[in-house]
Every structure is written in C-alpha cells, then in structure tokens.
Length: 129
Image (cartoon, rainbow, N blue to C red; front, side):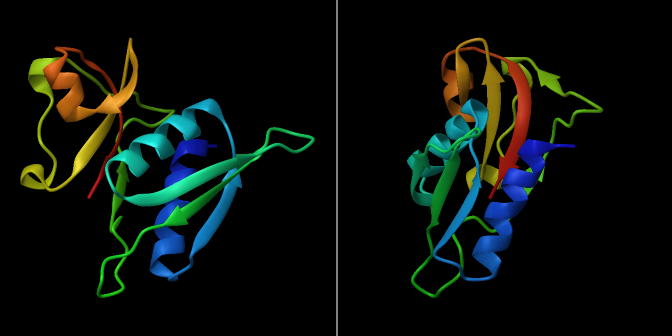
C-alpha cells in the first residue's frame, strides 16, 4: 500500500470537497511533505497530535479567492513498485515553473528548485501544481 500516495490523495480530495481541514495518520516523511507544502503556499498550516498509536496530523487546506484549492493536482512519481531517481542536471521544472516537485535527497526532502541550487539529486516523490 502506498501511504504517501494515499496522503496526497486525501489532501487533493479534501480540497475538491471544499473542506477546511483533513486528518491523516502522521509519520516523519508526511510531516516533511506537509512542511514543504506549507512553505510553498499549498497548505495554510498543519498540527501533529499524539495518540496511542502513531499520531494524527491535521492539515488546513488553503484556497484561492475564488474558492478553488491552491493544490489542484498531485502526481505521485516514484512509487513503491518503481522508484525514480534523478541527478540534479536532470531535474526539470513542473508546469513551466508554476508547479514544483518534492525530491528526497541526502540532506532531506526539498523542492526541485532547492535541490538544483544545492546541486543535489535524489528520489522524486511527487509533482504538485
């Protein structure tokens, strides 16, 4: 089961349903992805609540002035059955610079722009626009 793909789908579906917030199970990788999405302006904020198991993340969805969600589409690139790794020279812009991709590098998760600036390659987790 692809937990990261499920996480991204939950965010996209919550935006399409015009929900204010969505609760998902927490993990360190999901926290890092949510942090990047918050920094890039796709989410308002997120909180992590402890429970008896792994914890729950509450994500607050961000919308445009016309009511459409900021995060319109998410495409999972590297899947559990097929991992996609790229060198820094092979990292491309997403939707002519209007989107971003999240890369897992040796220095943690970062956007494709940050990875290019630091001359790092890695596993392409997803593309967001």
